[in-house]
Length: 308
Image (tube, rainbow, N blue to C red; front, top):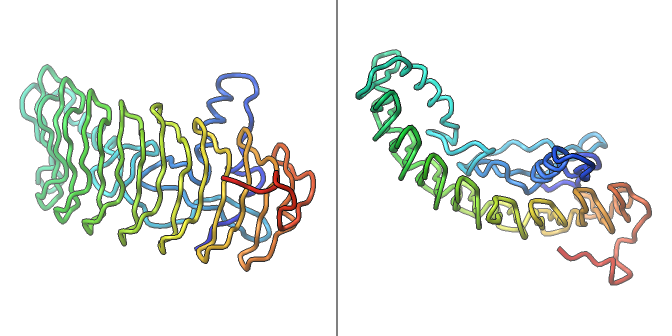
């Protein structure tokens, strides 16, 4: 598995702001979909790919640890969203009178238990796997999730643990693989990812590390690691937008490095092939994501030396 060079006109290249606030929102969202933006902390993004002479950025397939949301929120099993479960429960409970309500699987075993007061969920909510083992437990207050919520894998090992305030994720949230090893952890404030979030491979080695400001935007340097422990990708963010990036092969050789402005490549960019040869075609001075001149492999002037 190797990091790949960033293509022109791909998710790595984001249109600058032109005009409306809608354009501004698209720009911020597109930049966060870059190679290190973690739209879904349950499945941190992976590098691009080079195929048939053209660059592509479709995410590589791989194991998805249970990280925070796409922005899907922590689910009941395998990181899936609980929205479908809640919607189904709501349909089943429509028209029900107050009191304890039970929904069941087709074979009659209990799937969920909830208490209704004035038609609104109140108190403890529980769900179960078909064999009767607990799947999730939490509390509702006036129809909103509140307090500590827990979910389990089918074998009974802990899957996730975290807190809600008025229906929003708040405080420390932790996720585990079905082996019991940590998958991801970090803090929410009012439903936003804040501070440092970390993800691990199933082997226990660190997979990625990202930093969010108080508004949930990526800030500072985010890193993605190879399973062997080396750095695969480093990206600097400012207010959720990428400003610089360096990708490294598993053997430690740099694959590409350069800076962004408004989501587009700008200034010196250097790219190398997998075998270590300098890629003169993709390397050069860029402006508005367009190559305007060539560059030597080794910087000859101080301003050409790239710093993340």
